Length: 259
Image (tube, rainbow, N blue to C red; front, side, top):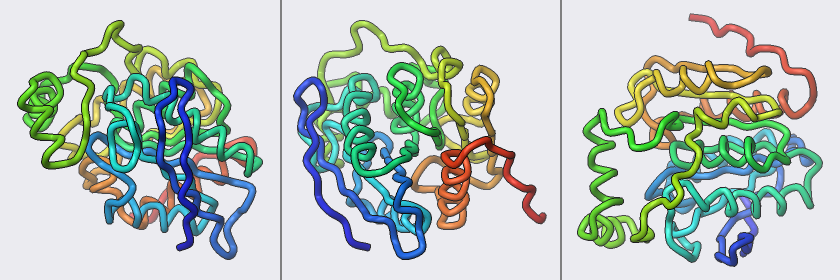
């Protein structure tokens, strides 16, 4: 799958690395899916490359590394200032394609939701495994995440093990939580959440759906785990097909699947 490396600049000056995949043969060249990863991930990961490849069968793809991750500069603010990174990628995509849909995973999903609500400018949004609320500590994995983010030793460990650079200063002010702003999204919204998500249980997806405005859909995938690691090729293809339908015009719900 051919990809063109792109260097973007967020509105606050942070350098953002991205890759633009032209639409594959038979895909819609007018549609671009802007793909954002979860915390400690990057677009060089095998799982994200597989997802990009599946999405690319339907549309062009612009995949970015958020600040403090992968090949991008800056420090991660764990979903706060990253909406500026996503805006830079959306603007890049919109200059080249008629329709733009954002697709985010975990932290990237919370960024996509907040970006669509606070900045807009996209034709549809897909949220996969997003937290609904901040400071969630009711699962063991999320207690570990908080230790990594809030403790100096934890930040050093993540930088060494995952090459993720986290800003030492916490949120000030605290950004709007996804459930607080999701009702302001004015385009079609798809919320995907796994029934076996070890980080954020399904009630996070349900709360987001409850607070969102129509047109909206909720896919609760009973056997799915968390975010990009648990996103199969089949689910990626379904997401891309939903995005194409959503960007094309009035959206009908996905047809029921056998079984």
